[in-house]
Image (cartoon, rainbow, N blue to C red; front, side, top):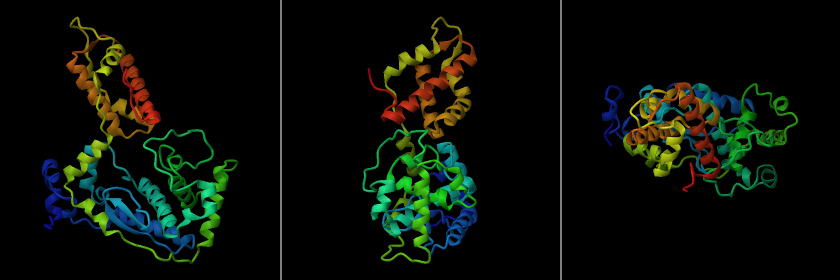
Length: 339
C-alpha cells in the first residue's frame, strides 16, 4: 500500500483527493479526537469502571457486536477531510467536541453491553426489550414520550432496544448530568436507575472472553474517497418521478405567460435558508434536504416553471412542502406514494 504524505494530500484539489484511498492517508488517532477519547476514559474511570474501549479509525461511528471497540469516522482526524465531508454531505457528524463526546458516550454504551453481554440479562430485557429484535428501516418517534431519554437527535433511543440502552448509558455517564432531577417523574428514570445499579455491580470488573479488535473492519478503509462519498450519498438519495410535477405547479402557481420569477433559480438562491429551516424542525440530515431541493429546482427548470407570487409566500410554501415530504418519509418509509 502506497502512503501519501499528509502535506502532499492536503494540498490536492478536491477532485484529486477523491481519487485516494482512505487507507493511504496515513491517519492516526491523534489531535482533537484523541483528546475526546482521553476524556471518555476519564469519565469511565470516574465511575470506577475498568473497560476502556479501544478506539480505531473507521468509515462511520460503529461498535461491532461482540467486539468492545469503537470505530470513529476517518474524516474527524483531519481538518482538510472535515471540510471535504461538509462540502460533499453538508454536515460533519461529530464535528464539534460536544457532538463527538455525545457519540463516544453512546458507542461506549454499546461496547459495555457487548463486552459484558448485558443484553442477555432478564432485567436488561425487562427495561429495554429484546436486543435480538430486527432494526427497523424507519421508525416513528413519539416526541413527547417520557419513557426514553433524550441524548442524540431524532429521539434515537426509540429506534431499537440496543439504542435505548446506549442512549440511557450516555446520559448516565455524562459528567455533571443531574439525571435524577431532569428525568424526575419520567418512566425513563427507572432505566437510568437500572444503569446506575448495573454499572455499580461492574466496578473493578474486567470482561471475560472479549474480542478487543475486529480486523475485518479495516476493509472499509481500502476504498477511495469518491467511493465512500458515492455510497454515503446513495444511501440518502431518492428519485422523484413525474407525479411531483403537479405538486410543484400547485405550490408555485406556475405562470407560462413569460413573466415572473424562475422557480428553479428561486429554489437554489434560497436553499440555504430552506435547508436550515427544515433541518431545525425535522432534524433531517442537511444533505437529504439539499437533494430534495436540487431535484425540485431541476424539475422546475425542465417544466419552465415561473411564478409571480411574493417571494416570502413562495419561501414559506417551499419550507412547508419540503417538511411534509420529509416527515411522511420518516413515518412511512416513502416521501410520497404514487397516485
